[in-house]
Image 1 (spheres, rainbow, N blue to C red):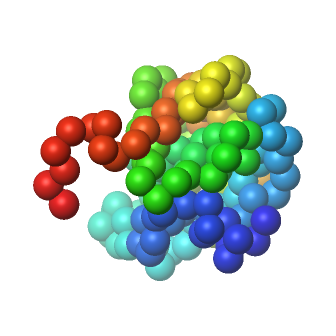
Image 2: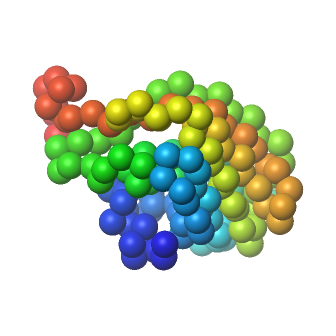
Length: 150
């Protein structure tokens, strides 16, 4: 799945869309996505000027976007009045990611019930693990979340 199709599965837009492509997936089971870390990424400019490091918080966002796509290809696309919310997260990052690295996110679906998914994702660069995240994601109607101020 190339970048143009990938954008149809996410509500995020520049500068908050992190994934570049979906490499492979099997609905209800797994999804592999990719992100190429660029020195031109907004966050890199200030993290850190003397030695660029891709922020782990942004890696977590890329993993969340991977989960959003896995949830939708496993169930159905989000309706206009639906959003996804991240639930519990347990993350561990073990190596630094820098501009020029090609991040591969290997996500497996641990459980899928209706509009709720739990998942495990291993992030790697050049076949070497750089982080692992276990988390959950739920689909919700915006109207069910109470008064919205936007």
